[in-house]
Amino acid sequence: MFSDEELKTSHSDFISLKVNDNFISLNTLFSEIEGITIEKYIIKQKVELVKELLGIIISILQNSGEMHYSNVAHLSSEFKSVTGLTPIHFRQLRHISYKNQAIS
Image 1 (cartoon, rainbow, N blue to C red):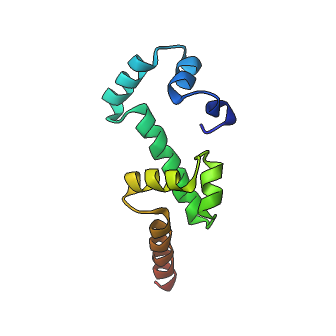
Image 2 (cartoon, rainbow, N blue to C red; image 1 turned 90 degrees about the vertical axis):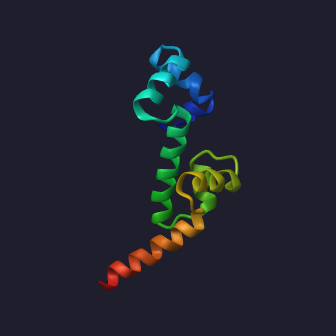
Image 3 (tube, rainbow, N blue to C red; image 1 turned 180 degrees about the horizontal axis):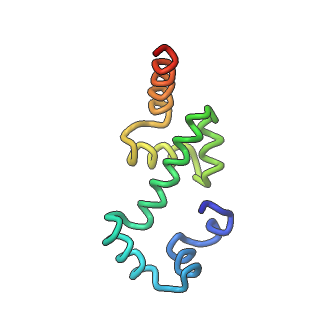
């Protein structure tokens, strides 16, 4: 989903080319079914992957580059808008959670 091919064009153009259909109609249909736009869905999926990467303790700088974010601030902003937490706060909470599970 996050291939180099995707980076050469916008999400809307990429999807339109792949499914050979108009993006506006696809986005409308997707929104009616899923209750979220395609772009917000893609952002949400990227953030979910970042959460997994943070969970295995990869630095935020590496995450931002691997997920094709232009900078860490952009990644942090989107991550917080989806989760309500900064990546660092999320990692701290997850670390505490893992410690508590290990104790139990």
